[in-house]
Length: 462
View 1 (cartoon, rainbow, N blue to C red):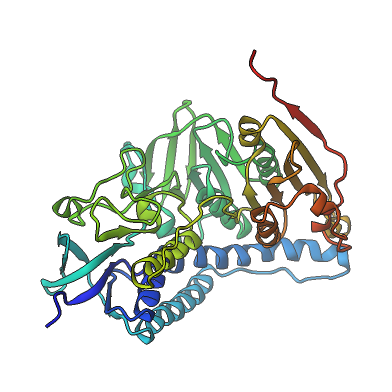
View 2: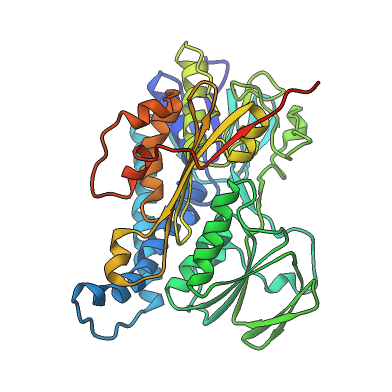
């Protein structure tokens, strides 16, 4: 008789947990994975995937407007929000079924239940109060929207979760936040015709991104009619029937049909029974504390993805889940390299970035060269749209290595994915320069910028 019911019990059926379960089962492990909501997790069900579908749909309005410059006469178009929601729900249901099927094909068992830890080797399924013993436990419960400190009227505020299921498109919406989710939904709602106001506490949106990126995105969003108010926060929300009044910390107020908060996410660590097993929380970020192999403070319990609050990106969770399974069950240690992770913001305009910002590079390197250009994309020369693309390379002035690449404009994410390979391989600016341009493209600017727009030299301390 086996010492444990399973070799691995995975708590959480998101992208990271699913990858870990499949790979571990492929290595011959007996695997059970529990998901209390829907297989696929935040990214598939109410995150990256439906968000990208909404973004694509919202671009149609711009395409119709731009068509006239190319000789097209397009009859007045109408948009139906319920149709968008219904078609999105259909696609998400298909993906959820595919996730479940793929896990089961790998040999892992899927259970639809919330699971909590009883001790370091025991998990209890709340659906039927069944206890499962496991040699290893992997926590992959992800994160959840965080509304921040409680304010009067907080109950009237929605998060990105609810935004995917609104019954109708709001004519006016106030969105608090200045990061990925806030700006992506600002572009989405504006694209479908809503009047959008973004509220952010800092001096500018996209904290942590390159300063040129932050300024460029804000300027382009404001050109599209999106109002961005910085240096203030939402202090109170009043409801009047179907309308809301949002009171700001600067004393002003805004009327809208919806109020949404997207100010951050917190790791889903509550009520998991972590304390019963002695799993430690990282005091700096509130996530489960783990080492370079995703091992927690308990030697047989691991955690991956957003629940660790390291790099909250779906591909990172997937890579961590795969590495865990290879390390524990594949008989080869695999450590995830968290440096030079490419990321995208599907705002409008789109942002793609990999590597160091100019500020980060100047803090770490004595000589930093900057290559930067902004230009009107070829499409805009015919459509007449007032928009510009930003491309920027951050280079180590001593070794010529490209330390960072930052792009704002159409297809920025697609271009950045490819550039990330070069940056990860430690390509030099000379390598970029030696690459023949692909013309006519926006991306060719990355290999045709010859002269630094700025050079920074840090003087050694005497």
